[in-house]
Length: 422
Image 1 (cartoon, rainbow, N blue to C red):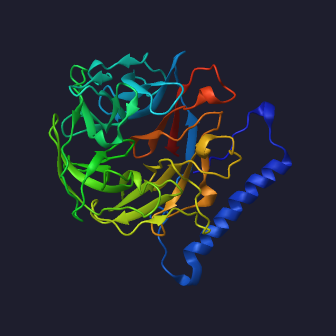
Image 2: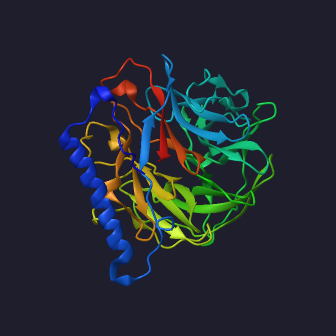
Image 3: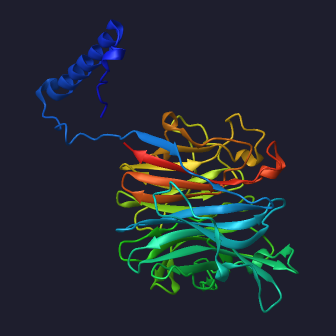
């Protein structure tokens, strides 16, 4: 609701300003009367009328990177209670090259994101050498608070390097770890078993949940988005939503639903899911575009279609992830796209945008698009969403490829932005 300005005596408004304010108020009253009494029809009362809350976006305190390493794949979860805390996990990553992931760190805020603790190594999630000689790093993690067990679970994938250098994609697995909120300790890196075959009879190979936004069902089960390959020689991904059971220690696959892919490039991958007003929504990454679909039960979905604006134009998000935000009784999409004076940015991965979604038409409403994190000569494609409550969510994003551009020599940052429905 808009408040009428109150002016101090030292700054009285001009006559023009007063006329403007009064005109706006009388105009609104007139419109309201027309709505209420048009054609003598009964109309919803003011309390019942649907409203769209405006969204306030404000930057938060960032976490500084290191001189020789970047913080990447940073994401946050919120633990409510009498002493609420926010937990951000991040990967210590080489500044140059691709997938130079090493150890996992965490940073804690006890004051609603105003300050963050110095990132602390999680020893159980350090890069290590496996029995087969491969170096294994946990990565692309997404932390989630699990109310039923009062634990935090991170889900993601394993990165596997022969001789510590050569990445082997076929050895990827769905990875997870659990944090006890009683003593603050993290358990070991674990992997979740998957079926050997999918519904088509094809193999399920290199399954992982990296960068994927899960959803916790009211009963405690997780809807975990997963991607996998069907053949060893083609890195073409199929994406599904798996229902998983979590008892506070073990994450167990139960079933999965519709299998989504496309016959080009690397298929569909990095899926993210959310529930909104009794239905479920799924967004997926492709090399050339971004895709969306909707379902009724969280597992089974309609055929996918490319993301578009409400005017019919393609969204322009490609080769990176998108995520969901549910705040203020509205559904939003967080994404990057081309066509934003950002041709100098790798894969157009900045700025980071947010816009409202029409859940019936499955389109992004162009006029609602806002910049969530501005472009500053770094990629912002690997973000995460943290739901604080019905009226507030945060986005977390570690800057990537700072060392390649005009900011070469600077340390990267983990950026945060708060979204509040007024």
